[in-house]
Image (cartoon, rainbow, N blue to C red; front, side):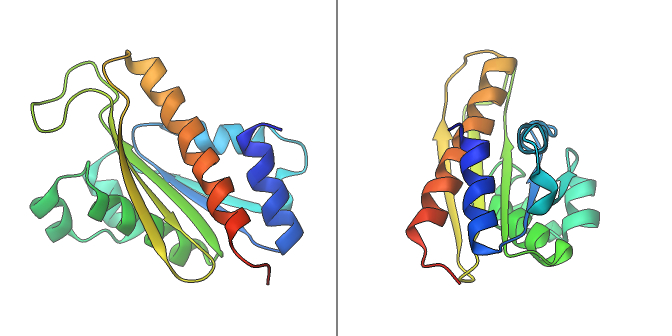
Length: 161
């Protein structure tokens, strides 16, 4: 079972609705989820918030968080996940923000991606992964797959409702 199928199945079994907030993946996570038949049972919506302005307007990310940490940071990924969960009114949300490339900076090189997972128990988990300079398409695909795989594992570890 691929990661998108696993996430959908866990959410379906437990009665949880799901949303996602994406920056560097530009909708690839939503596409992976909605490629699966019956996804509408549990997938509510996806927010593609590529610009900082969109993160503020659509997800309620605080301008101060972006100013203090940058858009590619765990605090912003956490705020994106919380914002997606709260604005969609769902139990589960995931968020991705990163540098797909080409380019980047010394502090935030190509392939650096921050993840946020807002879970049904109220917790928000974050993680940063350095995928390396694989090229734009490979970084985006790796971020999509990682976000969904980790979400499946985190949801599996939770008790059902």
